[in-house]
Amino acid sequence: MNEFLLQNADRHQQLVRQFKPKPRPNEGNPVTSPNISVATRIRPMLDEERSSGQVPAAFPRPGENGVVDLHELRKVVRGPPPLNSSTFHVGQVFGADRTTESIYEELVQPLLPWVWEGGIGTLFAYGQTGSGKTYSVSGIERLIAGALFDGTIQGQRSLHVTIFELAGNSAFDLLNSRMPFQILEDSFGNTQLAGAEEHKVTSTRELLALIDESAIFRQTASTEKNDGSSRTHAICRIRIQNPSQALVDDGILYLIDLAGSEASRDMANHTADRMKETREINISLSILKDCIRGLANMDNFSTKSSKKPYIPFRQSMLTKVLKHVFDPSGNRECKTAVLACINPSLLDTGASKNTLRYAEMLRSAETKSGNPSISPSILAPSETGQQLLQLSTSQFLQRCLRSDGVTGDQAKAFHAKFWRLHIDSQRSLSGRPSATSKKGQSLCKNASNTCLSSRDPAYEGKKDLPNFKERFRPGLVVRWKPSAASVSDSKQNLAVVLCPYTEEAHVQAFSGSLGSKVNQAYQGSQQYICAMVSSGTLANTYEINLWRQVVIDVKDMEAEVLLEYDPATRYYHTTV
Ligand SMILES: Nc1ncnc2c1ncn2[C@@H]1O[C@H](COP(=O)(O)OP(=O)(O)OP(=O)(O)O)[C@@H](O)[C@H]1O
Image (cartoon, rainbow, N blue to C red; front, side, top):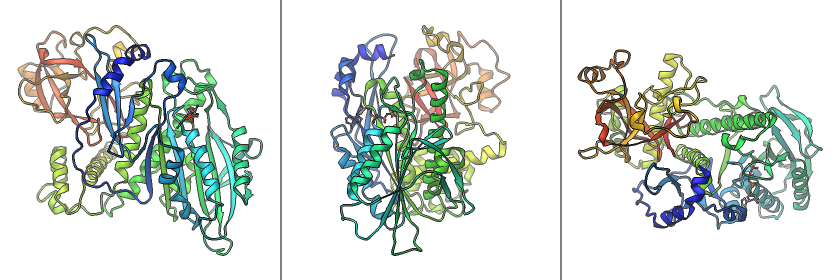
């Protein structure tokens, strides 16, 4: 794939220049949470990337802060490859020309007065390996070291610093020659760094010296994407004590440079040890994301009737350290800033999409769905909850928007929450923990029950696939051209093949008994019964509507489309 992209880099650039973004519907002013701020940084292309023929594919949209356009080239059987552009709404966006100073000022500086007065503040940088996390966090740490002692924040404080790294389930003190130490929970439920050294600092110079010392001991290794890749999570913890108020909690500032996630294709040449290390990093990152999502949901959906979101903070060492940030029973309010780092190259659009999706999810979760409240009598004047689930997304959103002061973002967040509650209730009823799509249906599952994709397992890893029209099977996703006016919510007109069309199958399908009785050959039919695919509430997401079926002529089917299920967002996404 990389070879194909590099060969077509000129065409990619030319199509990107011609790209005209569609005007964004007016969704009102996004409501930002006082407790979670999300920003995205797209780093500049590096010299070695340019000299190897790579071109940028991720851009902040001019004139619209908070919007990123990501352009992929699609491989097609015949003709020149077309551009596949996706748009993400991801909080503040810092493009390649923006400095670390500006990110510090807009995203991180507001945390300082908060921690100075006894609050807990946290900055996370996450993203693919080589996307600029260490560059950003180390720059921000130096700016903070200056700001904490330049006298701009009023009041005497004493500052204590610990810097450590987490590798798998082990913790190492970076200010004590990488000595291992224990992370324990005391009888008050507080996490203690048992054995890590805490250093009192009284000046910017002392703090910078500790930061430099820790960098020497941090474990790094070369990856496909980054010669000096950080293979551990590095955490700088600054405890801020107010000597004049012994009864006030100490403020704590966490600055976290996470290890980069690596895609499986970048792990091809890893040894068994490196594979294990990368797997452990990816597991802890995924638990962290679950916790951040849970935290955002806790902020937004704590209405009396809703079930408390589950935050799995005890499942990894990283999130155990941050227990007080994530523990719903904790009694201290926290402010969290998240920096999603993006590598702009056209070779990295897959990883960038993943990072942007999480930023988008956090941002949509951070909008307050209950404030102003959505009136139940306007949302459902006569319907039961089950009937509400049958409304189309646009009908549901329109009803939410009729309540005074509700914005588009709030309506979408409420819609997402409504479905999440429904799925969770179905899951607990069936006792099945596996990820399912919104309608309880999955395209296909692998043996470990974790990967859901429309990819044909029979052709896994094979290069020269026969034309999709010779590979009909249940679960094949096609793009098609309806002869009549568009019948799908999805801009792409996607559908999932269920079975060949016969009158008998048609009747059974609509009476809900389709399945074991339909076992005739899949190939050779001129028409197939298909389930419609509609757009999800997040940009570029899809859901499968099994009850909305359509008979599609094979001649109207244009191409196979690969859909992959993302258990985190509970939506399907297209993949190139
Ligand atoms: N904004 C930027 N401007 C210039 N160079 C940058 C920028 N961001 C990152 N870089 C460069 O990109 C390379 C990778 O950056 P960095 O090591 O910070 O990535 P990372 O996300 O921390 O990677 P890993 O997860 O593998 O540790 C480095 O050479 C760094 O100097």
